Amino acid sequence: MQEIKNKEVKNGQSPTEVNKTRVLTKKDVTKTYLRWWWTAELSNSFERMQALAVCASFTPALEKLYKRKEDLVDALKRHLQFFNTQAIWGGLIHGTVLAMEEEKATEGKIPGEVISGVKNGLMGPLAGIGDTLDFGTFQTIFLALGASFGAEGSVIGAFFPIMFSILLFCEGYYLFHLGYSLGRDSIKKILSGGIVNKIIDGASILGMFMMGALSATTVKLSTPLSFDIGGKAIVVQDTLNMIAPGLLPLGVVFFVYWGMKYKKWTITKLLVILVVLALVGSFIGIF
Image 1 (cartoon, one colour):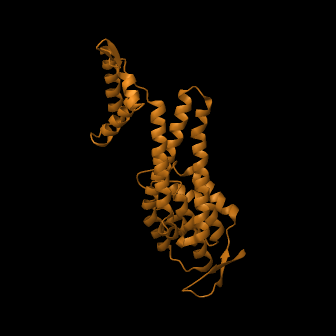
Image 2 (tube, rainbow, N blue to C red; image 1 turned 30 degrees about the horizontal axis):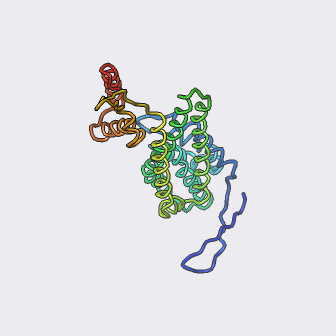
Image 3 (cartoon, rainbow, N blue to C red; image 1 turned 90 degrees about the vertical axis):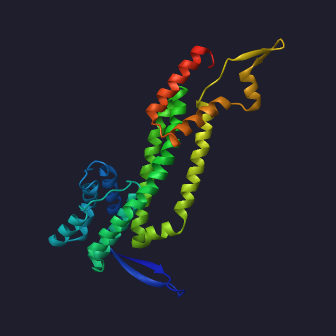
């Protein structure tokens, strides 16, 4: 065991020394995270979803915390209850819960129901944050960049999905240890500080910027139409370029956006429509 001294300030008073008995080492916490990383999506079932992965990842740490078989069995059953969240940001929950289990094992002040309540209450909100940031923004950016390199025949494009996986691993590692270090109040501090909203806003702006840039470089559309007015040939594409370069590709992007947002078309339906329009337009000489 190691004694760790933390400082806290209450109601404007001078800092006071608070001793917390730590049984788990950084290596134990990292091991728990690694087990969660490898198993989070392997044990999904409609009955318990990720519960088996949670229990499996916590088992070595719980065995170190609870020496009595009855206490260990109780803890294992606690983490076999239904659980489902986004795996990366869910690490923040697990780090916090691990700290609570340690406090329960050493001081006995935390009821098991409170630990279960923390998990149940936070798995939904953090899943929303994680899905928005990781899979709604970062994944889109990385895969779009990789696709743009791949379309040019560059092998660099193949590394972007790998880079995205590395980002998720590092993000999960940080959040897991952050949850364990700050304990029960960690998520409250993070959410109440407005940090998450700023990150989401910044990531959304970056994502929109990248989508605009990639749309301008990857969406190709032009027209060969021309008119003869007063003996002078007017090329429609040249005229459009003088008004706004890339106007037709931008129109395609907004057409796809309109179809997805307002007509609720699926990706498959949109692809079929675009292919049909391209074939018809090419056949009659518009594109």
